[in-house]
Length: 273
Image (cartoon, rainbow, N blue to C red):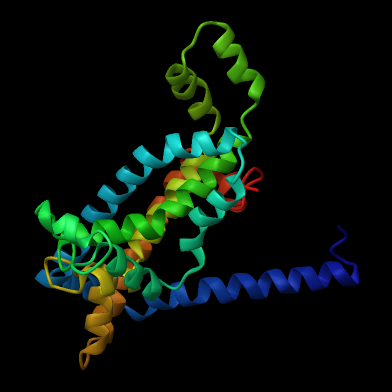
């Protein structure tokens, strides 16, 4: 494309506007918070508890998502069956429903009076207003990001490689672990980053399903809202926001180091049709 043409100049202007619009709010957070104030905010016990809870619960959530989602994405990416499109639509639905609706849906399904609430109560498992409930909410909202990327990544693996592995005597699991997963690694890595980032920023579903109890269910996004709601708490909210931005940036850098830049740039993928 010729940048000196009329359309080329228009594209450059549009790109500049997009970059400024997306980067300026992030830069503004760090411009408004001095390093000393940031350290002071992190010195508050409530802030440390919220950050530690976010890191702990998001880590557990992404481990669950990867362990369950990887073989599920492998199956859905390679197999064609009647009703597959309906299954993929159902998996992707949590991507577009509002977070508050996700929280209500979890209550309707897993709350004390939900569809499975009685069975959970009989089994001694409590989720509402518990840390376990935070993990459930994070898995619900983040799993579709990993599954969608994983399905596209496995669908893009050369089927001849899988067939060659089977011909050489590799069983189903060995073919999956040594051929399919390495071949789909960039897509899986970007899916992990998207899922982890979504879990780290989750707010609405967690608030409605697990509540916002300090030290129990109050994750960093909920602590940011709590600080912002207090008189004079804007600076504390900025400091916590800055920390979450740093963590999110580290996740993205980790993905780039894994060589998943291409998959991040095209989260829709080519095989999730």
